[in-house]
Length: 283
Length: 291
Image (tube, rainbow over the protein chains, first blue to last red):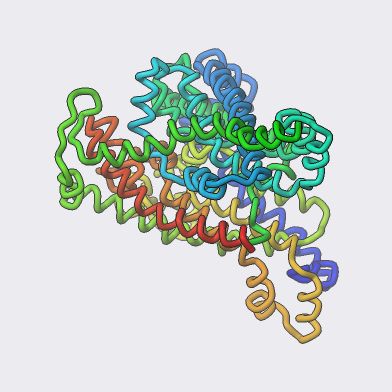
């Protein structure tokens, strides 16, 4: 292990390390702590510039109620779910099929196709913007959830296919061969042999992609414009324009927007990190 | 029967791949080509397109705003490179087994999980000229308040710092994973040889962390070139376009100035710059695949 385990150091060193870790964490998260505090402040506190001190009165309940009753925040929240859930499902489903084909079948162009998926995943969004926007408009899907969902599925398929392919490559070929010898059809093999084995990967990938799509802002700006469809990221920045002075409301909204990915992250931490660090330990 | 199966084995992968490939081609591959093609046209986004050859690119060359955006992209790339070493530093700091350390590690990762829009809002308060924590902090050292986000000399750096926050968290996680998988025998052997601290880090640990470093550098460069959300939420490219980058400049020209052809040319330039890194990444990835 590196650095040297702290237990092997002197007692004072050991103790001060334990304290230092928590102080460092506090400093690191200071901006977030401030936002959470601000979401519990009164308007009077905001006006008098008490942004960072202890709130003079705790308005947690009032502020969060107000966000939901006075602003379209609830609508944005629902919109984000309506967009994100099907998009995650679609991207993961398509890429499991594609990843399986790339991992377990030998055919010409296999590597080239794999490379195209990886490369596509890194392109700047701006090179896609105008054509994707035009395409969405011409399909009559501009300013609809479907327009955003379709795009997210298509784009995330790149990363998801990379992920699934790398996972499936590790599955033993013998299982598939054995099923073939038994006369099981290719589709049945996928459904009954491969799919049960990739369940952990599906969970990990879903959480990760949920976060990516939930946090998307660019496409929410480009493909959507009305409050009826707008997801929470674009919603909150629209709120900022309208409620400029009511920082406590923007803060409450920010906390709400951040919550779903944060909760998912804590629930599925190990998988989430395994997905993000894909390839960080080999190669 | 056997024959049917081998035939099935030939066309099934096509079926498995078809939905993903079709969507990917329609929404990613084809639009890239279309954007490049559009960059040779003068177009307001709605009406007739007029072929203008390279004139959009020539205009870019003379556009002051383009050079500002390009220069800012360069700043992003240079200063974003602080993320891997700082991330490594934090990872080394946290790589201990004390009570609660798992919670601490995941809390450190927090900034990466939340939306950049939220990060942007948080840092906007942080920099608030009258009440912001930043000005309170520098006030302790007797420095006059600076309105970071409306000062054209400081604005880009202010946004980069906001962007570094989640990026460092990401690099930290990459390194923590790498540190988890170090070869203990090598470290023990080096310890017996009397290596420790900096020497150990340089000659034993860092070489083993090379895969993590590679990924950290790639995602950091791509992240720097992709920067858009923070600029859009914190400054909209202002003041006077001084915090713009190519990604934002393109968006502004196409959506607000109705210059889709010009925007496509900006996007193409950004794409070409990015290609260098994409190609490098692919090359490395496919090489390790063969090994």
